[in-house]
Image 1 (cartoon, rainbow, N blue to C red):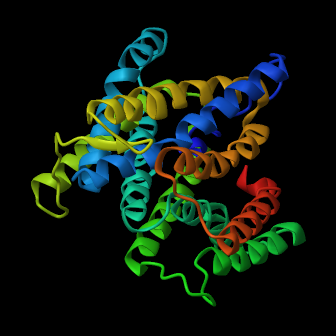
Image 2 (cartoon, rainbow, N blue to C red):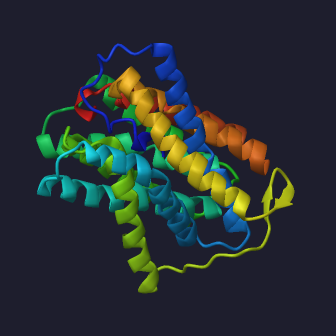
Image 3 (cartoon, helix red, strand yellow):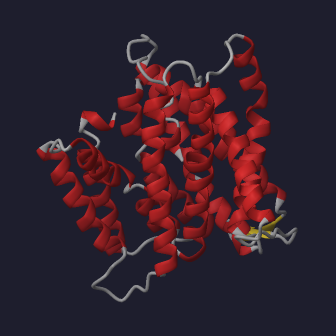
Length: 316
């Protein structure tokens, strides 16, 4: 997801790069990350399991990011034990866990609803920081959390006639939990772990972890060469597979990194929230899938709430 790169670069707010270029990069990252849900859903509809889609994306992402990561490592000293630990946890939770939860969620939920559930991560993190430190959050962030939770009731349309799959909701909240873990891991990364190395290494770790899950039979894994349905027309499975790997993984991470370098982590994290809007737009264009008016209203409330929560500087 877009948030998975918004804080990889820390302490670089004053680089002096053109703001317009940074904004373009950050928006490109959000747009390319946002297409992952609809593209993954086309593969799921063709007979792929969520775990198979995760393995395809992070395995292909690792290969696509291998060369940039190798170039960085040539100029970087060896990673410390702390760096290896952070990268390992990052791969398991921030990359594999988030995607496994999200792709399982979109199997039974609309792309927009699944994305909004995942984006409750800052609210979960706010509660965790409050519990751990005992320090009361700012009034704005508390209001934001309340607004986001009210918005969630509209997203799942608890008072309406829309039937929301409970298992899909559980997977969406699992993705949010893993994304909250990402924020904590990013804060621990420091300068010793370059974002490209962290992204590439995390993809490798996540691929291995999900491979173990597949080998142990903990979750089903199956793929298909059957045609997928994109833009209402059947197309080879290779088309969405390449888009998932090259566009919504490699390009999304790299443009996100460049955006953070020019805008700073805090501004880029807010721009990253547009991934929700892009995900809904892509789902409409590629799958003719659009949330109800009530769910769109809930999505607006969730987005506003998350923006207010993100004003708490302890989450930056």
